[in-house]
Figure 1 (cartoon, rainbow, N blue to C red):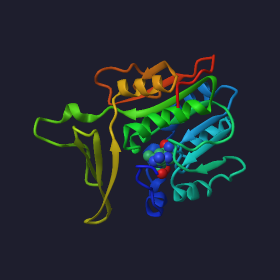
Figure 2: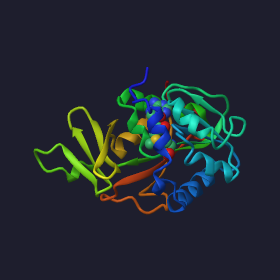
Figure 3: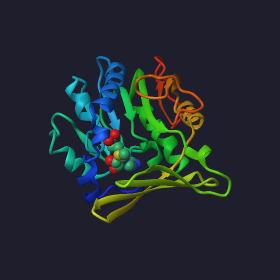
Figure 4: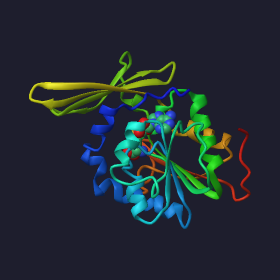
Length: 251
Ligand SMILES: C[S@@+](CC[C@H](N)C(=O)[O-])C[C@H]1O[C@@H](n2cnc3c(N)ncnc32)[C@H](O)[C@@H]1O
């Protein structure tokens, strides 16, 4: 049983409308890094959604397999590519096993946080390690919690304020739980309100989870262009390697 919110049919049908995340400026560098890390091997995407990244990576010549919790998201993917070309198992990325060994496992667009307990996040790292060939890489893309922007006494941090969309995160600093709130204009004066829940996690905690899974640090960048990660970076792309000995941590 997962703690993740289940992405429903209405959410899935709107997902590909976010043109910025589907732009060549975003996807070009993302796919460049992932294709290079996959090398001559195959890639496994955890939480691949509607295939925003998986489909262009496949088009680049990298065989891709997926694990995805939401059948409605997979249904949208299936309007683009069939199961023969891009096999997907519907299940929880913390526990689901798929056949094969992969040179690359990746989990992008902040989705580690969708697992809302530390135990499940550790299990997710271990599940990635289980699928990796010796020398293979696990990559995550994750924001750095925006807590530094929060004045004392406040619990909310806005991340976008425009007539089309107002979004803010609320944080519980005791439990590391958070909720993203979105007010999105649908037409005229009408707005749709939606939320997603997450457990926030710092880069250092990710490193410890990787260590528990038997992975060693390989790189940390601020973004897919491999910019330097600094104290002010709002997100990170982190890479860990399965030792060539292939010895995986307990679990
Ligand atoms: C922000 S979307 C990212 C989709 C895709 N990776 C992308 O970059 O566009 C988050 C996805 O994570 C999936 N998800 C959430 N929790 C999950 C879990 N425990 N196991 C597998 N997939 C999960 C959701 O169903 C949704 O498709």
